[in-house]
Length: 374
Ligand SMILES: *Cc1c(COP(=O)(O)O)cnc(C)c1O
Image 1: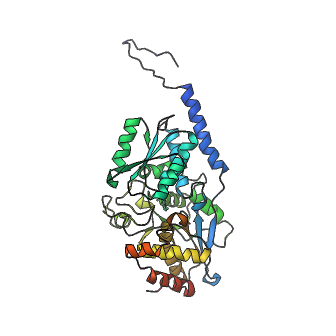
Image 2: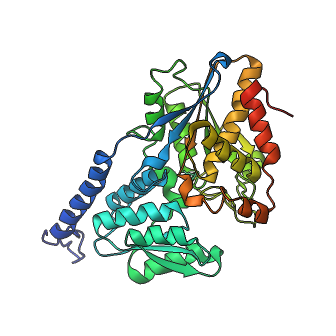
């Protein structure tokens, strides 16, 4: 510590908060997060089989193989590095997040990795499997009765404990290195390098925080590619309406049935200006698509993967009908075994009043003929 410097009036103008113990802790915490990334392999770019003669190739970036099983592993890593490097995450102080889903699972993992407590603020109705995964990574679940109070309750807990409220919906887009550093976009383009169409015509994403679509679109623009970015939005979500009307204040009251995506308000991390196109996808179409994925590649995935795949297949059919050759990329966001009692359960579909029949028929017809039925 330096000696305080005094002015003639006796006011201290030099304050030094540096503390050797904290600095050593910070270095070690950053090293552990970086080492986790260094131990991790890149995620696969899978091919969805289409007839070669169509001249259109479809790929899925398989984000289910991260250590915590979803694309939220990337987000949690970025949020932890951002919070640590900003001096927001401190030794022995809890990290708090408002999340009922995959973000809390991945953040609990990183909190344990650097040795700080983690509290997930979530609705009392959160599925037992998600609670189990958070507690498996030594996280604590704090329940609220009204989901709308999750955010203020998280902020209150942070103030009360001296902890840090991560706030994924605000910080997702800015915590991520959008120019490169092996982000999801850079990785996709590198993996496409030896394909017959290395610069995709379209990348299709879905939006929860909006962070992934922002990273993809910004990277494409920064690298001066011609690729277009489409965001597929599920039923109970206002992103489509907000993007279409340009109104940042749109809301909707009903919660999304497609876990991980669809929001009741325009989240700060959703960057509408960067997105080229949006599609509204019926929830039954998302389920039909994710089941078609299993028939095509033998893998189960979550509902949001179906939402993106439905839109990607629609775009493929447009390219086929226009005689345009090229590639399309979408994301496999998380594994289907988390949702066996949901998207893979006919009982659940019936209880929700969802009929996937017509959408399944549309996909089958497309895959056979290349034509999207009206
Ligand atoms: C978060 C999430 C998404 C969307 O990603 P964002 O970057 O938050 O927009 C899609 N699918 C699943 C399963 C998710 O958890």
